[in-house]
Length: 213
Image 1 (tube, helix red, strand yellow):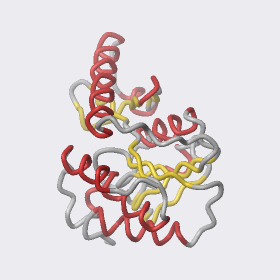
Image 2 (image 1 turned 30 degrees about the vertical axis):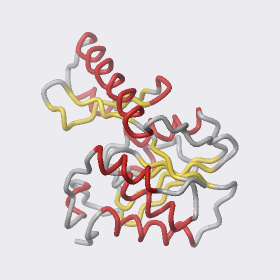
Image 3 (image 1 turned 90 degrees about the horizontal axis):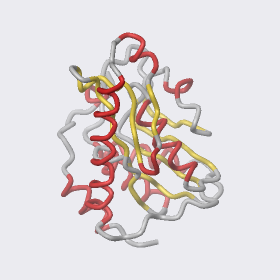
């Protein structure tokens, strides 16, 4: 099985792949916190592009939080994973409560990660949405939808590893770039030697250290 050493080395490989492609209009790289940010900073360096975060949160099932029934993000964006909801009975009150909780966390994280810095303008730009991998596609769909709502002229979803289904389940992206698309995908973390959790402090430091472009 092909594996990346860690998120930074995965980002370097992804950045090299994107640097070989013509990207017009000018790109802005958007890391999906937390795990997507160490990948995104390497992509931004390879492209000489601005870096920002695009904060989204998974809506986990009430008793199986690791299973995404959908995702929410900035600007009231929301996507439901109908395949998951069809297999589980989740009542309206539970969905509302989980959605409210995760929306509050989105707003809190925006404040923590940007630390008062304004968001990068996406108007008329190519938004390159970067995560450390895509499984269900729910988070990726919300992230791409947010980028489009913020004025991006083109949206590219770029990840080191993805399921084969991602190419048909993320219609919000104009283009999808994935280095690894294993036919028997099981989990994103299986394709990393080091898949330890990225901390809020690491995200803040990456964004603070990256030069303003």
